[in-house]
Image (cartoon, rainbow over all chains, first blue to last red; front, side, top):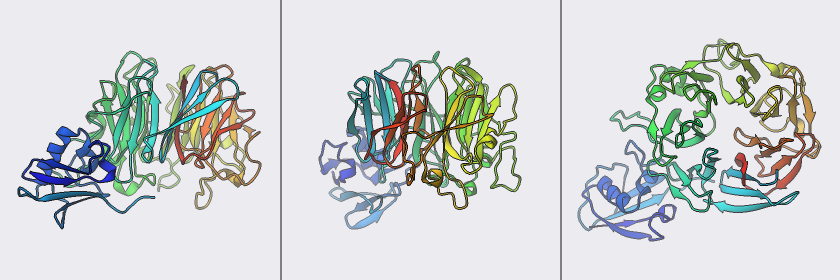
Length: 87
Length: 372
């Protein structure tokens, strides 16, 4: 089980929850699991070519990744953030 | 005008402006506060399906969808997305810019123009979308939309889809770097339709393609008449001719013929309106001389008359973007425009006079007048 931190920009998909649990052995599998339960969430954060969107950031623990194939170990934290941007 | 509602898309959400009778307009919203709404459209075929092209500064693009006239909304099940590819340069949709209800004979069909330049089609009322290979995999696509051609500040795009009301297979696209493209086979194949349209920023100023077509529309009472507001002027084309005529040459020289959009009259094919902007020197893209005005032609572009009564007489620096100027189906025809300064203006006398009916909104991207 992976604990996932949800940013405010995506909390409308999770009914306001800022921390949810998900299954998966890679970042992409966890996002797919989230998308099954919260339809539409993944596409807002990762594009159709599996690239993390320009103004979104994903961390596994303290380490940032932009690779959805990055393996995850059970018990790791996945943190999704909106990048500093906009105006 | 009565029983009209205006669907307003802005840089920071959507609003609905309802006419309560006479001079009374009431603003409802916001919907999707903070989301960039490039287009907010009602399906005229069922009168209740509404689509919004939405994105945010952070999140990817989506389509918000209502099937009950805007009372409830849900996200499209499969928004426009290019086919998955292993090519590291494969495109991904940055935002949907234009939403077009399909032909009257094709209920449930919608078309979408997106950035980077792409065309999508839905057959289920906008709930799921498919890439249109006839455009997105067209052998000329890389030449029509080369990365070095640039585009709008938000990226290059297919900014408009136009369907011939007499023939669902006959379509036009307005694009930022291929000018106008035409299909006669339902989007299966496309060809440029730009003869005599200037591209002053190209080595050959009258190329086969390369023009920046800001807006194209058919005259509703004569679909063989096309009006175009181009980056390089105002044009008219009467099919079957393929040679556009620069009717903007008949505009006052001190105003010029640069702008984002053009509105045809609902029943008089010789009448149309434009909202000029300053396209001199560094392209300020504001009302020329700070004096906003609409210009109307009633003789197919042979002459133009200034219509500025009600607008600021000086120090008015807004402009009107592509989807933000429209007419209703009334007689006389009501006209509505939304400004980059977040104001909505209307005319109930076909442009003779204007009054502000809403203000203090975010930058307005689209205004659509529909029955309440």
